[in-house]
Length: 348
Length: 74
Image (cartoon, one colour):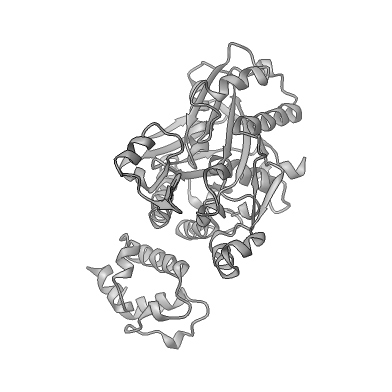
């Protein structure tokens, strides 16, 4: 699916990282020095943030949103749409977005959605928010992304334990003079490549039927991740999505000021960048201190780079965002972020 | 891309192994520098040059650089 949606602006983005930090160098006793060194060489992730024991995706999104309201001097009553993307919601129902309507003092006229997506979630969130605005339903939409990935895996799954971190972000979109162009793809035939079995209603049926694919230490794995298939997916389908979108909107890849690409691991991004033939400066990997935070990686790249001297965001008039995740689902966005304001947790 | 060019492109992916160690008969998985990351580099290089998709299994079935080349031009 390709579409250009007009009359929208991304006003501001804030990100939140929980206080607790998992340092990979502290795990040499658990995994061995060699394993840590070879894993870090591929992931590029030295440390990641871990949500507090009583902290959920809802709580983290609340802080990201409150921070955005404060920095931007936003009257919560002006917001009329709320979209939350996660794969670690508080409940199967009611929606976290509805609970946040009250917590954030939004009007009861607000339309709220929870949408389950993993690493591709920022693309879907911006798409849903844009549709709410372009349909005339809403004037100001708050998009929240939050993940407590670290609760889905333990030390028995070192490849995941050393990669996935917790974080949240808040993005404000409103009626404006810019446009957002989208390319979105789905492929259910590869749904087995990455699965989150955590408390899904089919999980017990699969266990009963002996269909659960892998056991570790006698326990069924909560998350299944076929590394090679995922790598192949990101490099091939990811790059094709970006090229298809560039073609659709008539941009040359050389004209793109910045690429905010999903931060799966450093090595994956290196290969994707190589396929796109763009420099590290234009398509950076910055998640060495955060890990792969699923749908929050793109907001984190943007807010992280916005506070670095090497980037002038007022020149980000042609930006490509692109993400790839479970489903499989993936997509890319072309947008103008030159007027967007960015708030990074360590630079407030 | 002919076999000689492919061997050169293959060798260029390595940073520590000397260039003169490479020829079409080299059993690449026996090289000290070979690891899972090198496998990804080779897959990516081959896909770029031949416009075909290779899986980890395809690569495991190849022993020499020439085996891989023959697989790619099939």
